[in-house]
Amino acid sequence: MFGNYLIGLREGLEASLVVCILVAYLVKTERRDALKPVWAGIGVACAISLAFGAVLEFGSQELTFEAQELLGGSLSVIAVGLVTWMVFWMRRTARHLKADLHGKLDAALRMGAGALVATALLAVGREGLETALFVWASVRASGEGTSAPLIGVLLGIATAIVLGYLFYRGALKINLAKFFTWTGGMLVIVAAGVLAYGVHDLQEARFLGGLADKAFDVSATIPPDSWYGTLLKGVFNFQPDPTVLQVVVWALYLVVTMSFFLAPQRPSARKAPSTGPASAGEPSTPSRVTSGDEPIVDGKN
Image 1 (cartoon, rainbow, N blue to C red):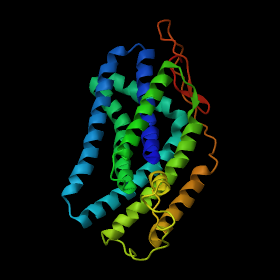
Image 2 (image 1 turned 120 degrees about the horizontal axis):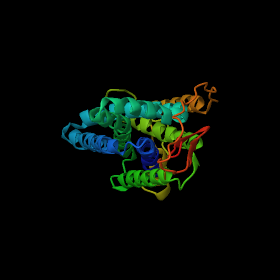
Image 3 (image 1 turned 60 degrees about the horizontal axis):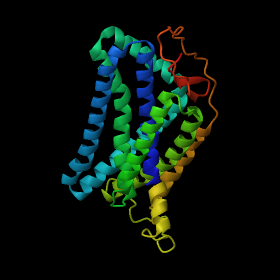
Image 4 (image 1 turned 90 degrees about the horizontal axis):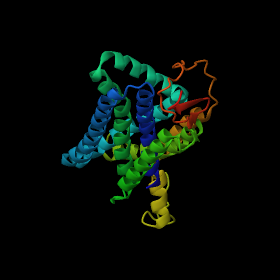
């Protein structure tokens, strides 16, 4: 459940920050008339993400067992790839996220309401689709057969929404660079377990061999139905009897990805453009959310 909570929190917070940046910028520049199409785009993005998740969940139930395993394994691998890319992308661009979104929003304001809807849709929809795919893959990997994984995701998203609101109101201060580094590292560990489970699915679908080649079997020491076995399964997608291929893929992904993720970043020479002085009628919400050098959600300047 913790792994799914982390997914909901991490992905939900990214989407919440995007929404906060878009809304705060429109309020600051006294373009409240543009809020309606932006919220429309956000609503469409949420609807598409939910529909995508429903298609994944209910559409796969009509397939044969081997087809389900092939689909599940393939999508698990794709989900891990997307999440890995997202983790590195956010680590690299978090400092400039506000400036990038402001530039896109300025261009959309010049083009009209349709462009505003599309900007919000694309900005939030990417996070939503990634979340739906990775949550679906993670829930399959957990194999709990209960509503606990879904509850964990919903709690994570709810927490992210509350944090996003507090960021916007200026009631909370947090260094997002450190936050995304810590949660990104934990998410890499969760992704490694999802990838290993995806490999197992592909083996059961007979797409990959080695299903009978067990690396070890500690089922007697760590029973899957024990509280600690359930905890390890929920947090790390731990399997007491993995195949050799699963262990190799898990170890390679974790070592290589974590090595690159923890490597020192090169200092960026990019500087966010100034949006100019605030006008007398602008709201005075203070900057409270920081990412390294510059605020991400800024209702003042």
